[in-house]
Length: 314
Image (cartoon, rainbow, N blue to C red; front, side, top):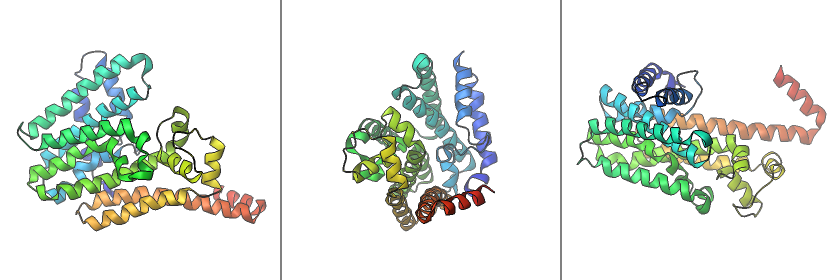
């Protein structure tokens, strides 16, 4: 995880700066804001949360040639933006319930902070603001229509849309360095990584998404394999049978493998972004292989499975 460890101290500084500003929010929003920011701080305990949101500016610093100051400001803007959009997701998912007023108020203050940072980097006539408008519009379209349009089965890269505002950092860096001709390539690269990241999240969260009716790419693939409509409720047993008996995770992981091959052909020069994608892919691949290995042991007999489990536990 050199793509993380190399920038850990700088990332801690960015979160500290964000915390100092959030601490100045009016009460009680300052306390709520600090708690919320701490929840998503990957430096706190190396919890692996949302690396790309915070680290993307650092990963593209060398290929774009932006300054240290510009890199930190883009990272700070992305931290504020990440927290703002996560709050929007929470409100839409009904998570805040009793404190929705506090969440919405906090979200708007975080949005103001993000825009203040970005205005310091990009004047009002900068093309950056057209890209910003585009990414937020795609985000809105994605959160409303991913289930209806069944993104994984129709156009997998559209799964990146919900996290698309992350690209304000990568596109912003390209604009600051004058490398506008490479914006499209980097946009595609980030979308590929965000798609696989969403697929990884969908594997981890499929039970929660099944319970609350949220769109989930893995569940969409299971439904397609069963000849069922995406909107038709599946049972936990049907899904577990598809995963652990019929091996539906293999074609799911193949989509991520294809993503990686496509990412390598772009030659964007951002090696740490590619390394992060390898990290995501490795976890998905290892999960699918472990499921296959356990299934094979079960087919050979219960004693073999018991023996292997004891050895793994030891």
